Length: 255
Image (cartoon, rainbow, N blue to C red; front, side):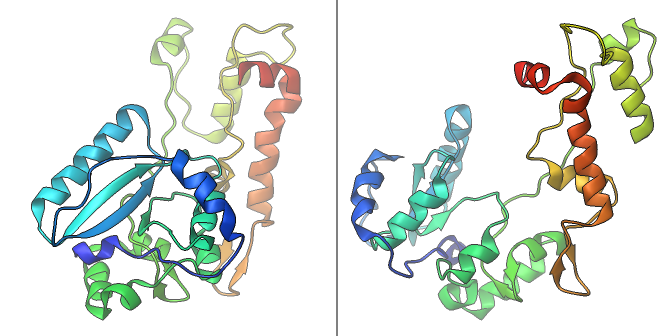
């Protein structure tokens, strides 16, 4: 299983000269691999307290076996794609990259990712199939080939301020319609200079709200992207309604 840690490899050639300018700016652990161990360079985007957690996980892994030595490198999340492709072009890419954006198919199509079987053998793919949930398996595959190893799945939840609702004699909403009414009750649209906006949808989360509205972003039968499905469009219009209700300046100020 430890061989799964190496699946990002060097590939095509683009603008090689810039890699040396970018890579020295990245933060990394100064520890070096002990003798007789294969070093695995691991890029991730966690910082602050989260970075400490990652470092502890890596330390436990390094102590658990004697074949590999993982060196974590904290890379700022912004422009991570550009930094990765520059490192590939320079011939010095990381062995492992943490990524939570839907980019696997694109990266694999560009030749940046090796399949798990190419690097770790067919047995590695069999082990992945055995212990991963179906949803995780789908996320890690492109055209039926394993190109990644999932380390977690997002679980979306909507939190509410129970104290605020109790003070106003309001109940938590059970439907999307009730939710809309509650938002308008707490934050009347026509009120000038509102002191509070009860809810602001994250513009990046159409991936979440599209499913809430009953949509899907890919038609499995036709093998086509279905981002323009009526349900997805309705979700996007609903998200836009908040700017229309309160005005873009008010929304921008609270955001």
